[in-house]
Image (cartoon, rainbow over all chains, first blue to last red):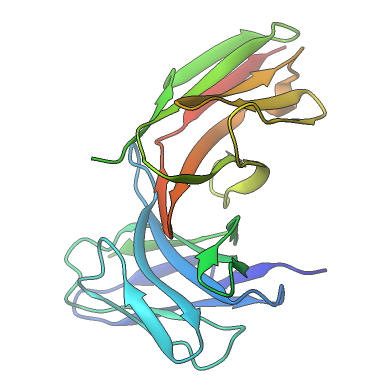
Length: 117
Length: 108
């Protein structure tokens, strides 16, 4: 079955610690995204990537970093610089249309809940 | 400022009581409008994509419609298993804007 997997499902971070969230897709999608979801707020974009070895900052990139070494994988690192990292993190992917420039429907993974201890 | 607003924030229905959820948007250059269902602690599950005003799509008890300023998600004769948060998102260019969702509870 094609889909998006995220791991772990739950993650706990101590103060001053960096943690990495995994996102893998086997949909052959070019574009991948990371969102943060907080209660009462819409999804907020952290980073996105439309091609291997290239990515762009979203609205709330501070304190986060990503890499895109393979088309299938888009890991997110939450660094110690992120002061309020407790949230539900969602990875998504989409095809690109219009010659590879415009994204289409996003499909989401199951999410990772990060809690700061 | 581009914005997506969903209403109501919460909706309680008796089983079988049909209703509609609203998603209004102010983005310019709409490329697509998306509806998702999200269960607690899970990722959003894709339901529909609508691309142009007048378009309608159906899936089981759900029907999504689109005008130039808003979209409706109609739920016909809902069942308790339809209880979830329904998210709306719009795409302008390569930007996606999400609403805060409508929490639907269907009471048996």
